[in-house]
Length: 173
Image (cartoon, helix red, strand yellow):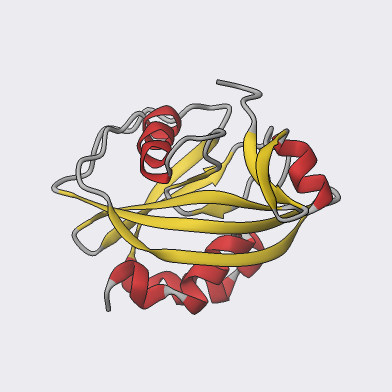
């Protein structure tokens, strides 16, 4: 639901906040990232141009913030369905990543991210929400580092961080 509060830490207390206010103030907050894979490929999404930060940049399959008191796994399933029109089965928790990055427009992502991978049997029919996603593409996992090194400005800061520092935890090799 649009405008639903997300959790953020302020003064050591986790409480509900407005998402844009959290990013303007750079408050530390929980997040979820999902990588959908089929065989040796991973789905990347290009963020819609109307997004309030990092519009038009390539990111992992799905990234979002849990609603207040929503579990990370429930959030991951909900947003993959809402953003891409895909129902996922098993989600593998790949770890927790904390990072802080300037994402432009006066906003900062300071996230504690629960990272998940869903391995699918075949490439699903995608029905991306155009308010969230302008384009999707499948890329070989083995070539992601070279792809990002070639044009880092085309990718979100968090995707660059995940692949640089957490590749083995996410993809298992």
